[in-house]
Length: 223
Image (cartoon, rainbow, N blue to C red):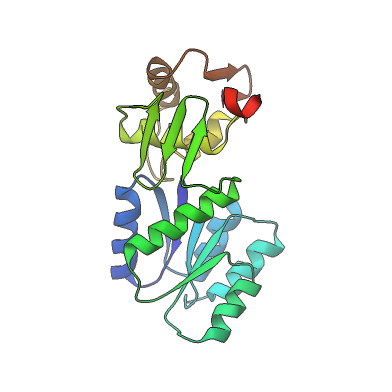
């Protein structure tokens, strides 16, 4: 899952970014509203953490332009202003949730998990796909009740598949959600991770769709 973190406080941005990366998110950062606006318009994100008090462009105007431009990714706004009317303004501008600074990291993570789940039509903290079960809180995936031993990249890839069951995902989309923008990518790396996952999953769960990409087939969802 790829997160845009738009926060101009370098200490807080480093702290939040580190925690997000530790739990498996790919994180892109912007320390001003101009860069945040550009990244949000040009790159795919599963969620955004957006500070309202950004320099160059304030968070509300950035959010308004995203929504006017058709960008529908869930947005969690951060504000140091403990005024109810500014929280309302954020929601009215298109935000999906908010946190007032200071906040606990666990609450930030829980709200992000909920936003991403809801954006993909999942109400529960557990996502099932046939014999696969993803516990988004514990960040664990099991098959037929047995835990899967996954590397961090394998977990990111399979979790993304499970948020998009029975959907054909292009190689570009999968790569964008697997690596940060500045990460040096090998064109064959994705195929290697898919091959590793196939060895750990029941046969034929990950289907290659020639010329288009890959699809995680979920028997329970298809029946």
